Each structure stands twice: as structure tokens, then as C-alpha cells.
Length: 100
Image (tube, rainbow, N blue to C red; front, side, top):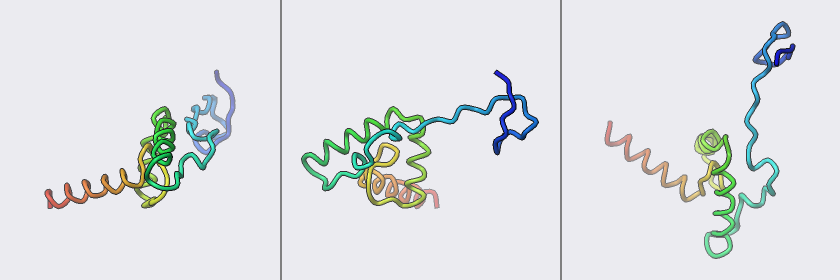
């Protein structure tokens, strides 16, 4: 389909349709799902539910990268818990020390 779509990627003279932007799987979920309280019992189940939403998301990798860039210390981001992200950072630091 071709039509004029003025966007930041396509100027007003473009005849190509704008690319379809991926939609985050969490968009229609309750945000509280991604912020379990605690690290045991029902909080672990909630964390797994949130991670399941992330696993079906086309934006999972960029979401995780954003969380790492922002040093997020709470919530499930990009399919990872705060504990998972701490482990990722430790491994990255250890790998950098080995190559230095």
C-alpha cells in the first residue's frame, strides 16, 4: 500500500507506507505485575508471570538494554529481574577485566 505519510522517517513527499512499529507486549498489562514485592513465595510467581509476558514481546532485547543503560534496580524489564540484571552486570565486568 502506498500513500503519503508525514513522519520523522518519511517526509511529506514520500509514497512509501511508514513501517509498522512493534508494540510492547506489556502495553495492556497491569504495570504492578512487573513490580513484585519481595523475592519469595507469591512474588516469585508474579515475577515468572511478568517474564512470560516479556518472552512474547518483540521489544524484549531493547527493553533489557534500556534497563541496563538506566541501571534499573526494581521490576522486571526485558525478561529479567533485578537479580538477573545484577548477574549480567557482574559477568560483563568480569569479561571486561579478562580482556583488559
